[in-house]
Length: 399
Ligand code: MG
Image (cartoon, rainbow, N blue to C red):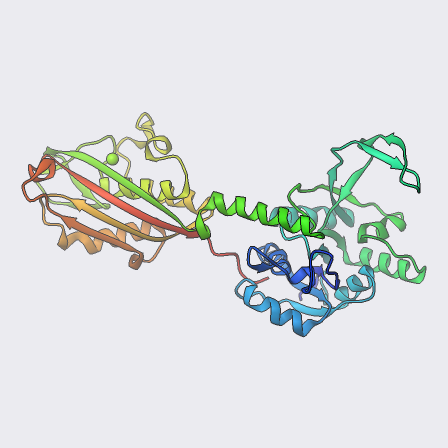
């Protein structure tokens, strides 16, 4: 990997089965995906991390177990671990090429986030070493060797250390070399840097960045995942419905799906009256669980008077993407007695696809006449029904 780039070493060399029988805990499924594969994904999503090194008990077996679950294009190196945590870290470091910044992460912390990874990298580059810390919230007791309570200590002077911990390469190398030559075994890498008397910068840790060690931790992690998928819908897939109706007014321009259609009457409304766009907006916002069109683009907002509804659709699509979704498909029914819509449907689909940032094959628009019945049949107005399916945004790709 390129000189100066960042590499992440995920230490998962334990054969520990404390979390349950048989499978070592780093390969045990959490929400159907091996723990270690979950821990890899946030690093793979950081373009700052150019290389990923997984230190495991058996590289061949680890590759076989993880491969189906790694993000597309993610090609980590698999390295056999050592007897101790720091021997495993050193084995990983030996494979880090010329990377100038090194992250070391517990392979059993699957809830690490790209944001935390970036903050650690930033502090490590500046200070030489950085560690995420959490305040101790509970009262802290000091115990005698027998387990008897001795005293209550001032918890403000203590913090809980997490990973990833970040280091300038030469700092980590020196810390490992010194510990090894002195036969010292630490519990994390930051401790070895502290022993050098070098500064370790503090990064705010993440309460959800759980280290999964025991069966109870697994249960808690499963519950956290379930809560997350509950927020995002079954399998992360979401459906939304939209509807809009506007009166027809003689002499007004008729705009449907961003296309102006020659017709003696157009749709009244605060904006351009483009109810295809309005129904589509409500369908995608609804699926994403975002506020509806009336709240997102209130008609009291002067900026929206005579706005192109197609541009509002593009803005709604941007917000939907930012909340973590891509459009699966959008299906629309336009209820209109006249004009005949079929000559315009292709262009309308293309317009909608352009605003939504997707291929037009994901969009379907159908015209339906009122057959003389109701407001549409009497040519008093038009209505549109829309259904949208959203899928979770694809995970970011290769490191
Ligand atoms: Mg409307």
